[in-house]
Length: 114
Length: 112
View 1 (cartoon, rainbow over the protein chains, first blue to last red):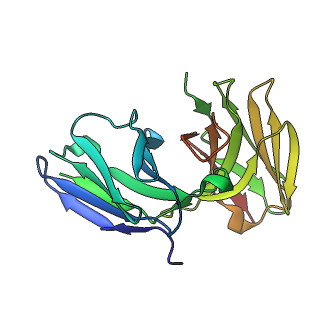
View 2 (cartoon, chains in turn yellow, blue):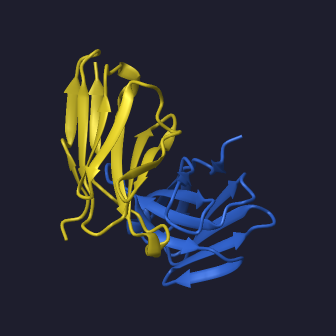
């Protein structure tokens, strides 16, 4: 398996622009997680899905952030409008319910908002 | 109070020695505990998980859990330069894969 795939790997955008991050989980995994990592705040859970259904989005910072999972093999995280404080590395991870926490992380998307 | 707390380090340990990494958590309902390793510029990878009080050993790694003290630790025996990384402690309230909360990580440096 190719592992968790994220795109783009790097994104530089200007404040106010819309940003869409994409994730393809490992085939057969039934959980998908979006995390954000910064030096100041560490690794923060934004939202997670189980069988394509959002279970907990309490970590989404504000209404500018939205996430979807239209099918088992694709998820998006959208920021509209983007702000400089959104600059971070965004990780997508997937897991199987019977593997009890063994999450496989994607390579991450480094987002810079100028 | 943060949900999962770790000393940020850096923790410097000579090659061949034992590295000891510690973590405390605030939610007494936590049931699952994990250690992830993250090399600079890379994504986290799971190296240990533990659910019950006591020790769990896997090769050079030992995870220790004390639920009464809300304390988790990771011991790395015979430390190697390749162990130099940031170690993230993670905790989940549930016994499945859901909602895993990470600490900010401890940076470990193994000096030759």
